[in-house]
Image (cartoon, rainbow, N blue to C red; front, side, top):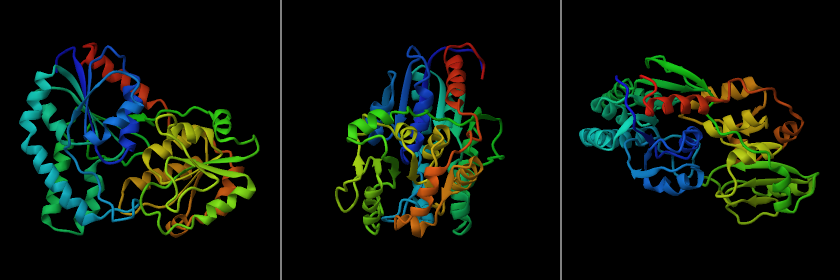
Length: 372
């Protein structure tokens, strides 16, 4: 492919905020003079405005479906429902691939980045543009185990997704990752993460706390909270332990659970400003914990292949404290939390400058200073 100057088109899945947070770590390092269009579900526009520190156009686009969670359970995956929705969305996206390729040509795009929808990679290949996948897993990896238990149509979907992903010029292989050995030209970039700022002095002042109270970044999601024993959180107040996060308890306000505005605080900042983390082990939360050196208590995630790589990295790092799903849902993590307060984990098991590496590569391509 020849040299060209132009803009960057970025396609980000509508499944959760983890992909958004990872991609924004890259985009905030790309100079403002590189034109940029972010293509995602409109529901995410406000979150991009809160996290993006450089100018970009926001464009409505949906071409993947992610995973479907059972009602009230954000830590598990409903395999049949996931594959049914994914097949429908994939077929609709392929039907529009000619129009997407035409948009890429008309918009003066020089390079495409996907985290992690596959169909835009097909459109980019059709438009003659270099296209890069930023991923630690693909939806084909996630769907494969579910498809084996279903029918031939489900298995054909996995093969179709793999074929689409193989249209990528290269893969920025973000660690911790699945092997994805079936994909050609993988570029290991380490962790792609925005390191948090240690703002614990400001955080304590904001909450009216003294220097001796313990701070715990607490993120269990919005769903499946009804059966949690919230009294266990309150019991920690007499020991000077306060929890900070973005969501109120399902039972209402608690004296030592502090809800912070997401436009002012990020999960990375809370990870770096706390003594421990209690959270689901997603890509963002795991990397933020490791780069901050803050021990993390987390439950298993069923039906999600990515969890194996994250769990292995957290255990290798030494600051990961896994607990059973039953205990996590009941908020019974007294022992692990006490151990977390005593832990001093070592360095992260992967380099943490992946965002810079990816941004520099994409900037050179967009400015016509490199050939894909």
